[in-house]
Image 1: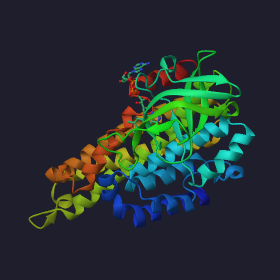
Image 2: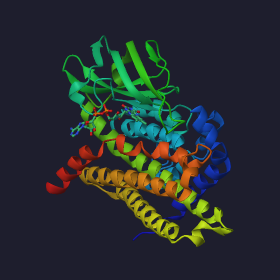
Image 3: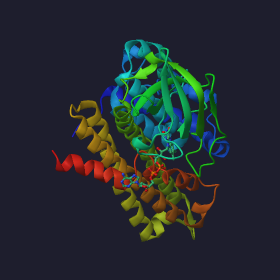
Length: 379
Ligand SMILES: Cc1cc2nc3c(=O)[nH]c(=O)nc-3n(C[C@H](O)[C@H](O)[C@H](O)COP(=O)(O)OP(=O)(O)OC[C@H]3O[C@@H](n4cnc5c(N)ncnc54)[C@H](O)[C@@H]3O)c2cc1C
């Protein structure tokens, strides 16, 4: 058992206060417009929310992954879309911090750490979402540059200025290779945003590369290291998602509590009148607490573990548990609301559109089970 440090408590409190005062009042607007106002992103940047776990040397908070999860939970209680922007930026920063040269880190990390630019990570293509062997975007090396051509699909943060990590097939070797591209450089363009059923505010685009040139020095790692880059991105992507969907779970839990205490039947709140509402609230408390401690444990493991395989296993299992718990909690909260839970005027209906995303992204349950079982059975 561990206690939160003073720093972790302060970060959690700052995120909670900002979410309650500034994001919650416009949660429905964000959902409708599928857009986070720039003023909100600037406010989050002022609080250091874009770079909690990254080294101070590059503008980060150096406060660890447990702090990161604590902050995302509070922010995503108000808007999951905000968490998508922060967590994908953090995936880019993790990869850059792990594989980038000192020059690349100095050039790109401080701006992305303070929210001036926002990073993306582009792997998925129309033909593949999880298999690097099927990558069709190409990078051709010529005269000290790479020339990139191809299409990337469902890319988060692609509409914001900043660097994008692009995993493509290097033509000489035929191997997956990761390059850092400045978004909106010549040859870069994006589609209209996809019309998602939830997670609004974090729009997804298809991205088109037409003879996009990047200096050869913008390679992350070496030719053929794209798989390793993807592996690191998937680990830290899952940690972010755990924070996001824990926030959605907490939002569902609190909506159920509040509705049960305020909705009355013959003058008595349904929480006092109906035993099955009390049973549901007890079940919800148990489920939220289990998800919360599993999530916080992952943050603690990410901050302390030396063995990367252990982190892969923990991230896969926690991500599955927390995202499934968020769906269960939302379903239970909707049942507490009766028919009102199906109406868009109620926050719980919006949360339903959000939680359904959890199990589909950063690895589906079957792939994560195989990943975790491999570590468990071979250690
Ligand atoms: C909100 C959101 C944000 C996203 N952001 C980004 C982003 O920023 N960058 C990016 O690159 N992508 C992003 N994506 C895309 C996402 O990462 C991919 O869609 C995801 O990896 C799944 O790929 P796919 O949809 O092609 O499914 P597929 O890989 O085609 O999977 C289809 C089905 O086959 C199963 N399957 C696949 N492989 C195996 C296997 N080896 N063993 C067993 N079963 C398997 C899966 O479980 C699934 O049920 C985002 C998607 C969403 C919804």
